[in-house]
Length: 255
Image (tube, rainbow, N blue to C red; front, side):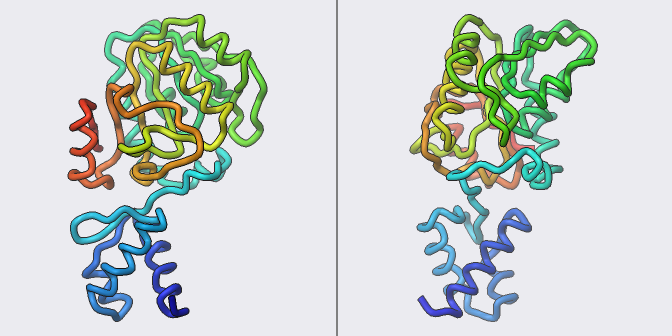
């Protein structure tokens, strides 16, 4: 690979992450190269796990091999996360007990839950517990365990043991990556155990995440696609890709 090619591909990835998606025609004009050159670059980038190609373009795949802090996440895809959170909260139905996973998007879901009826929220996330502490009609049950400083969430046997003792109506789950081939994944085995137990304890499970999570694969698999009842993401995930997930029996919501 020449230096010029590598530089062009880096620029494509940067644009995709900044804009949420890229189009072959637009990139060809901006980079001053042929459309086939851009298509070839996108094939290479997809092979490297950096983008997922669509008809006429591509969208970025979020890196699933490392974790960012809550502060770093708060600066990424903010409006997209808020739309997803609001749509996910609408799937509450008649649930009276809810598990809310660690992470920014699940926290935004918790903040979007209705306060006009009694609800019990179980969470390992300190940030979520604090956000709901004064919410009217919401009882917060904080799971004990070892606190992870990067995410401000509890893990290990104390956490999973408490979860195993509950029968939860609905679990809102996040992940570092979701793919049809590898399911839901996350980098840390301790976090993986908490997520897996939450799904086992819940009657219904909803995954909510930004479009860059799709196609990303991390180290620890904690659930198969078929264990989910619904997936909530944004319209930045192409309709064709969303349809492929719906073929697994999932209710897919794009907002």
